[in-house]
Length: 193
Image: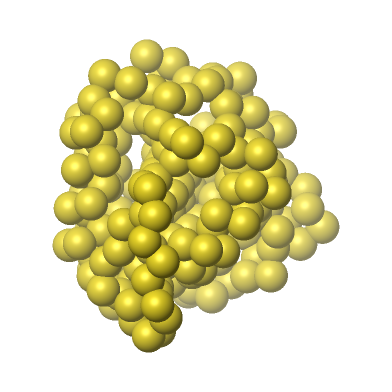
């Protein structure tokens, strides 16, 4: 199954099972790329948020016109920060951004629940996972998530703030992915597939 890709300077489509790494500056405006990726040619969406709360994700989705009715949010931040959990349709929680087993488990549940459909997953962000856990554990979790995408013919976009990590760490992450999308400080986008 192929998926349309509505991100500038990238192929028009990618096959199911593809994982994309979004390299960006830590202050980069990634919402446009993320929501263009999510909003195209899909049945169900999972947004894994280790950087913002479910409420902030909902605001972003609404602003960019992403269909909330087919979107589930996995909030890894609210419990850790002691925020009240705003339960709602399609909002799930894990205890913290370093609960990598929980993130993988909830992603597997989402993919199994909607198996056979066009499924997109956004992970925002791998940098936060590595900050709370460590690079080795975060990289293992990313590998598990990529395997799940392949198993369920889904596609995923994983955010990584490039300058926060040593170059060898960035290279090790890049090696895991089928495609790299780079957003520079001026907002220019380049794809390498």
